[in-house]
Length: 161
Ligand code: FE
Ligand code: FE
Ligand code: MG
Image (cartoon, rainbow, N blue to C red; front, side, top):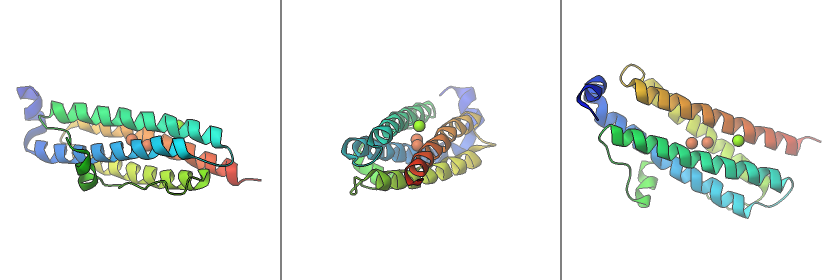
């Protein structure tokens, strides 16, 4: 990062990089949870659910990329070992042990709600300190809000009769 840009972020750089890395770990775990869930899904409306899970997997991976880019800009290093994702994660990993589409949707809705919280807290933490990270957190949060909405709509369609 350039001198002026570093000056803007100031003394908080390390703390911000740590928060970004925790969100980065969440994104990889969310990515895999969606990716593997899409492959084992079973039941009613399977096609529609799989399409949504695959789309979200791609978007979580994109989020991981956006976070890495900012971590590197701030002079940090993204988490290098997958085993450390478990140490850094805020939201954890919910193995899709029940492959029914309803169970998958509920699990992933829970994950999205956690993700929304993570980006809300991140945006609050950096609001007056790092405007670039602030905008990044809001941009990702908007996607997570959409993810929750999409999954809840599918679950609703499924439970309505
Ligand atoms: Fe995400
Ligand atoms: Fe998401
Ligand atoms: Mg979607």
